[in-house]
Amino acid sequence: MLQPLARPFHLVLVSPQIPPNTGNIARLCAVTGCRLILVEPLGFSIADRDLKRAGLDYWDKVFLKLYPDYGAYLAEWPSARRWLFSARAETSLYEARLEQGDHLVFGSETQGLAPEVLSGGSGTAVTLPMLPERRSLNLSTAVGIAAYEALRQVRFGMPGGRADTPS
Image (cartoon, rainbow, N blue to C red; front, side, top):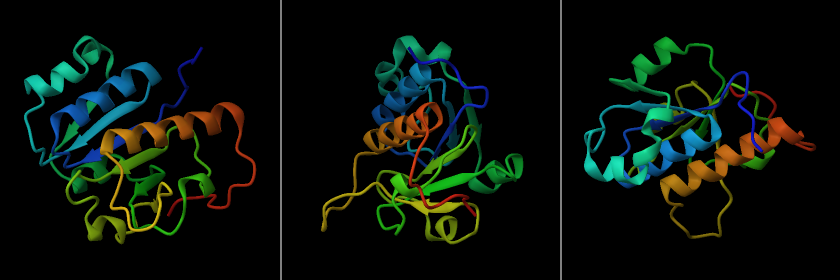
């Protein structure tokens, strides 16, 4: 059985566009104890019925924080360890050493993270390995893989990782 972490992981969605993806990620947060951070602009209202339907009976168990933009999020979490997910990053998630309290940051379904976020020094870019010439994974699938890898690392240790500290 999974036990809550002293310092939970934060799953940060920057400008998500598809309500069911965000609802599924909220449900993931409810069952893992991860915190959900949404960074506007959103492609939907958080009251959207599709969003609620995807995690309807879990919303009361989700820690949710909403920020008006990426700068406001950074201002509240200036020293957070951030892992910036991109299909084009060079470093695999499986090479990163994740720690309790880390922020796993994902971009929108249509655009990913903006180039200025990826190159702005707010974290280390990582990727989930995929076959060549594939565009990307579904957002809620990618977040689920990353969240459970993070939990695996802190619960069971992670031998052989190389990317010790995000920028």
